Length: 254
Image 1 (cartoon, one colour):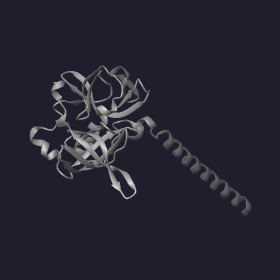
Image 2: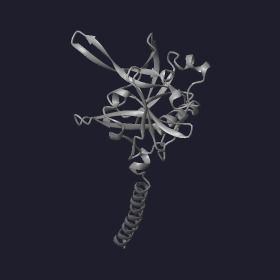
Image 3: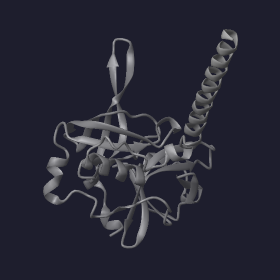
């Protein structure tokens, strides 16, 4: 009789254990089916909720206006990749980028955004001295263009936009990867009207729009600094040189 009781208890325990195990497997399976897709994780507006309101707004503006600029040299076949900022003015759409990223003409220049390519319509202005270009493009779905001049600092705000230790954000495509979004701090200003920020830069990030906490476009990435050491020339990828946006001739699109 005791043997039968023990067997009954064992059978009940096994049944309960199997039921609990089944529930656990169901719970794991359910959580796996609810796991977000790669596209959901990568979507431009998947921004951390840990940021405060100003930071979140600046990051969103940065991510929703960043594009990749691809230009081909017809003589050498070299493909140059840089970053640009999507803009709108007077009902038309443009991309602000660096002129050194344009190694070919408009017809061999493409704008990449959100998995699709958009052709260059016209080089509105290419300034090789200051190193920037304004490219006219068609409207790009899913992105949110910055409004010129509304999304530039107001006249009284230029000084505070370049104040030391001001927080900045930018989104770019360094090393053909991205869009990647970086933060940083203003660390200095050069006599020749260049801004220095402590962040990260690499080839491909040139042309990335720099945003302050107000969400204003205050500059674009030009280059990273280099230094001389006892071992030779070294790259300082954390010291990024930025061109202030007041150096852009906005009158060409206004």
